[in-house]
Image 1: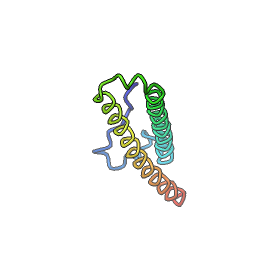
Image 2: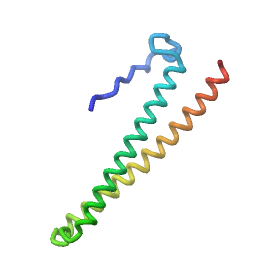
Image 3: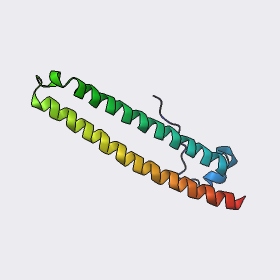
Image 4: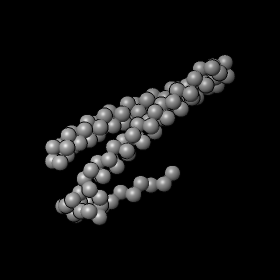
Length: 110
C-alpha cells in the first residue's frame, strides 16, 4: 500500500485559496472521498476480525488442545482491534460532522 501524498501547508497561510492546490470545493470533495475510503477500510477490518473470531469459535475443539495463553492472546487481540475500530469510527464521525459544517459554510459563500 502506498503512502498518501499530503501537501505541506504549515507555512502557507492561503493554502486553500491557492489555485495550484485546487479550489476550496475541490479540497473539500477530496476530503469527503478520503472519509468514504476510511469508512470502507474500517468496515473491511471489522469483517476480517469477525471472520477470525468465527473461525476460532467454529474450531473450538482445536483450541481446547492449545495452551490457555494462546486463547487469551486471541481474546486480547480481538479486544484491541475492537477498541481501535470504535475509536477510529468516533474520529471518522467527528470528521464527517466537520466536513458537513464546512460544506454548509461553503454553500453560504457561493
